[in-house]
Amino acid sequence: MKVFKVHKYIISFILFWSLSSCGWIFKDSKYDYLKEKQSKPIATTPSESTRPIIDFYPIPEEKDSNLVENYEIPLPAQVFSSGSTNEIRMHKLGEIRWLYVEALPSSVWPLMKDFWSSSEFGLSFDDPTLGVFESKDLTDELVGSKLQMKVEHGIRQASSEIFLSHVSKNLEGEWTRVSPEKNLEDSVLRSALNFLSEAPSTGGTSLVALNLNQGQKAVLKQSEEGRNFIEMNLEFPRAWAAVDRALKEAFIPVNDLDRTSGVFFVTFVQETDQGFGKRIFKRRGNSKNADFKIFVKKIDKNKCTVTVDSTTEGGEVLERDLLSEINQSLS
Image (cartoon, rainbow, N blue to C red; front, side, top):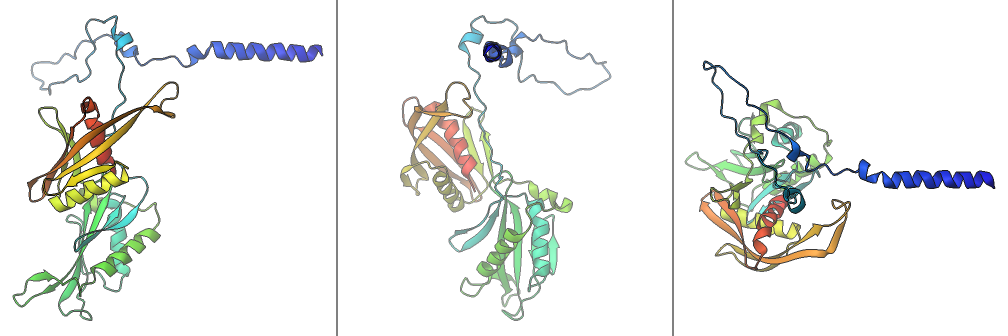
């Protein structure tokens, strides 16, 4: 009985010591940077040329006693999307079809080269700098016809798009697209989709195709006036369809739309984090709800911009978050 009491006291002491020392273990250090001092710049001789150094995060000269109590450091907004699900799917817009792959073009290129080398159509030409494949002449289908594939960077940060064209020579000797009723684009793209689906997820990267990783089709930018927008290197029909699909994937309700004017009318709800473990737990009781207009504007033939305007009082603070959410879901 005495041994049990001793153990009881020991356990109680350990629990008391652990709980009382939580403040030391979980010390809040997010304001420690305010205690830092500005160091002297590196001295250089007149003969040495250096680039100007810009301090984007300067340490205040005078410490405001109310700063720590009244200023809350906001969490950084995620303004880009990185594909991580290895998703592969086919998209269709009008008569155009393409494959969407959540992998960089330099990783997709060697897989597509294997696809053409092992296919019944064969491979007659490939150029990794342009991202182009061409099959051998399809004499069994249409005399003088061939298949052309283009691998491009997709809308998301780490994604690829694969386009296929079935072309043939006309009487003037020019290559023109075969009519949708006769071309092989749908069936060959589906074969490529199946090939990619069965390929190992840990594929290699082509060094000669690294340049294809440039040219992301959607980038979140900021104007000189401080206004955020998404720049899309796409034609208007494709940009409109991409934003429409992004809103569906992000579960953002569309109340109305006007394609002629390029406007979506949506309601955006953002839930804020509260208390200990705020990155893990969400409290639905503290949510913000506002109405917005999303504008898809044509700049030129192959370029559009996406902007957001709040129609609700106080909704301006959520404009960037909504734009970021759209950018995350573009594909």
